[in-house]
Length: 330
Image (tube, rainbow, N blue to C red):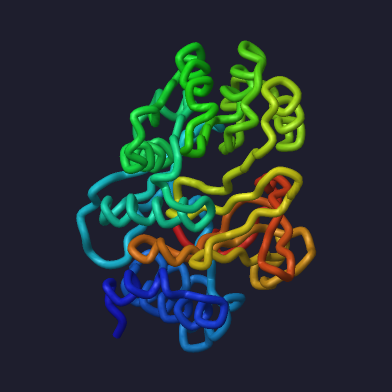
């Protein structure tokens, strides 16, 4: 029988050839030690002995994070992350067994895509996230700010004047500069303080949080490029229910995942047909870092997975499109 510690040690050694074996081991462990997931699998009429591919795994609908505590094993949570709930209704709750692991994992995700954290100043413009409690994004960026060791790394909330002053000071600094922002705040900055931020990597988290009309990523890129000369814009694909993030960058509509995360596309009318390539479908996520909660999640996002493992996010599924085993368990 596997143990929690064995998965902790395997996550960062995973590669293309070992991912499936590790994921299947984790599936069997979670099917045995997560009572809710075990009931869900039984409700789907699936025997764990018959699951031998990522496509055969039953993926838990993400809505269960709104209605149930999701735990593999018995432990007392050290933190609880909650979704914004901007669309109304019950927010999702992701219970975190080990906050130190979460923080160190956030650093590993960052450094996989961007390199050494200490090479950067991290400036954050995250109003709406900071104005509520329980944001996993704020927790992640706060840790990166502290660990960067830069006196300029900080949250700036709505203090655009101070932010612009800091960005001006850092223009010729030897460290690289990352501006991490929610989309509507970045657009506000661009409108109020047009200028030149070509020296910055900008990471936008998406969403207008009811502050502006929704815009596509390309529309946001065009505005930021025109008004503040943003040449490098990254978009993040992450959510409260996941510990890992994927990113795409300027001129590329495809997101790329770290080695410990994989996207599996499903037919939106037949949740048992999974593994679609180059077809539009629902997005399922395998996040090995979720070994203490649940690693196999059926999201409500619509997308397309490509043969190289990259994926596009095309929007949200309408409730009428959602089908599957979530109807089989209360």
